[in-house]
Every structure is written in structure tokens, then in C-alpha cells.
Length: 150
Image 1 (cartoon, one colour):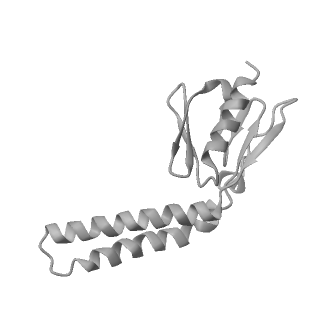
Image 2: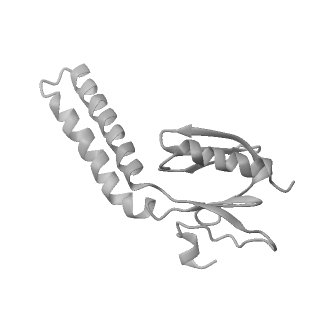
């Protein structure tokens, strides 16, 4: 397998004979930054609580550290995360790199923030992150499952 396929943020699994892509799920930039704002707020609060519990008189530095840690991560991975794509076919859900899940193997679909989590019957878990409308994403996948070729 070529190096570019290993690190691709789009599906690299070839379509089967007669298989067609019905929809592609792309991350939403606003959802990405909104999720990171919530993550930063949590990290700031936790940092302050830890310093307060330790008796540190400069509790405010926990907020600075929490914000800085999340901000650095957010800016560092944004370009990769915004390129991720999942394709819904009439048979499978194809994710970045070689991730491929047959629709008949999906056991659970749940939401986590702006992400949609897919859990297979074998226990594998996949995240479609930063969806602008996570409920619509769930509905589209559920609809495809009910019409999937078994």
C-alpha cells in the first residue's frame, strides 16, 4: 500500500462492483471550533480546580494552561481534521484510510457532541467527527441500513 493511502483522510477502499456512493460526510469548521471551545472551558476549569486543591495561590494559571493546551492542539490538527471524509454507499460506510464497515454490521449509532459514533457487532467503534447536524447524519445512516442489501 502506498504511503499516501496510509495517511489519507479520505476513503481509500475501492468500491465493489455495482456499489455506489450515496452521500459523503464532511466535517464542519464551526462544529470543530465550537467543540474545541467547550473542551477548552473544561480544561480551564479542571486546571483551576487542581491548583486550588493543591493550595496554589495562583489558581488563575490553571485557566491559562488549559486554554493554551487545547488551543495548541486545535490549531495543530485543524488542517487534517477538516480534510476527513466518510462516504456512505448502498452497502458500506467508508472512512478515512481503509476504514470500511458493512451497513449490516452496524449495531449502534449514537452521538457524542458533534460527532456520530458507529459501533459494529464485533465492537469496533468509529467516529464521524464535527458534523454540522449530527442528528441528520444519524438519520441518513439509519435510513441506508434499513435499505441495505443484506
